[in-house]
Image 1 (spheres, each protein chain N blue to C red):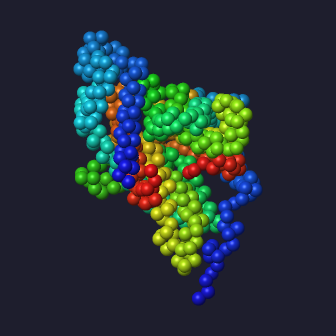
Image 2: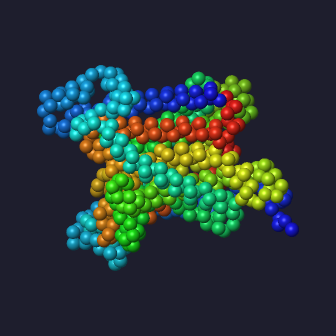
Image 3: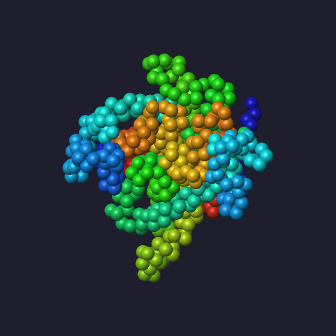
Length: 315
Length: 294
């Protein structure tokens, strides 16, 4: 068990190291001098040289990488080439906003998908089950940003129930915060729920065919209690896997949804930095996103050990 | 109290998953998916020979005309015909999808086969690296590419293609591993066939149905990613019509002309639905003996 956890940690560290090299190489080795890009084509060579020196861009690449990664480990993400502001506090602010979106959307998705998927599995040969399947199939085909635009046209434009966009910190005006959060969370959460529902359905269907469930039913348990007591844990493993795999999609979905709803999150920061050619910020944000994905995958690996005791013994 | 018949009491045969013979039957997903995909392709082909108007023609006197008359779906804020833009946009969508899926398959399939046939010390790290790319979704990769190279259709296609390589490689590897265990591969080895010949003559044909299914699913993802990229302004540059950019241009007009958002939104969703259904349907129809684990 301990050995297994240790191995997972090693894999996580190795993955982080490799992906940081990939992200760095991507931004550093590709053509274009970040200093020139940040200052524009009309900048004087002297100004470019000064900026290069200021940000250490004149040093060897290996040293630049070590400086960057060393900074990352100390939560110092460096300075923006364009605004010269410290990047770490900026990312921390933006990350809070994005986390609100992603976490509430995930909760919404789970709360909707688990019962819906279970119903779909229990009634997979009935019209109601098939109808739910069809709805979820359509939900999968709608990307989150598109759902956002459609939700705005209905609930903000037509009905006028909710604001179309904007962001208010919860501490400033909790009521407005919730009102503005509803539509973006729905756009992310509904799409996520549609994807997840299909996996819950197939996981529950698999469990329904198992002998132990037949035994539970044979000893007199009604379908739902039998599923609750014996099936849920077994169905949880594939569902949790999908949740983790979907996190990358959800985070990147949030990037686009933030643009739709004019929300100042990590996605907006990323897109603004791309437009401003502020490559160091792009590099930092991408690394944070990748870190989040790898970290969640790691936590899910550990979660397996909690959900499924059988996995503790496997080497 | 009498117990109603429950699944537990039924003869096992009725609970056994649908048999192979039944699976061979054409399923509704396959039909609906094929019809939708066929329609998208037909629309794209139609746009080469006929369009009601020039989709890029700006005409200030025809701004924001409602649907009807000469303009079936009305005009946008520049007076361009929305219907013609949808027709023309289908070309962009299919083009990006074909190239992205092509890139992913051409690299991902050999990679998967290689990982399955190579010795462990080589195959294992290869798949670890492959999994790492999964942490970079298509859209993130495309945004990174755009940050460096600027947004264009080519950059979008390559980025989406590269991001789709890992799912191909992973699936094909699991299929190829099962093929490598079969007796005919063992026989081929015993007969002195080299690894390359085995890969081409035995493994590839037997994983081809997996490739087809994955291509359809990846196509749907590519369509979504292209739409999102164009929506963000990193995809197809103007004036080439693209469904994603139509959406972006409609955003400021949501109050006055929501149809400008709804029309491309429906086009994107229907196309993605078509490729998803086609993928699901093909999976059941082709019944790959090599079950892929979900």
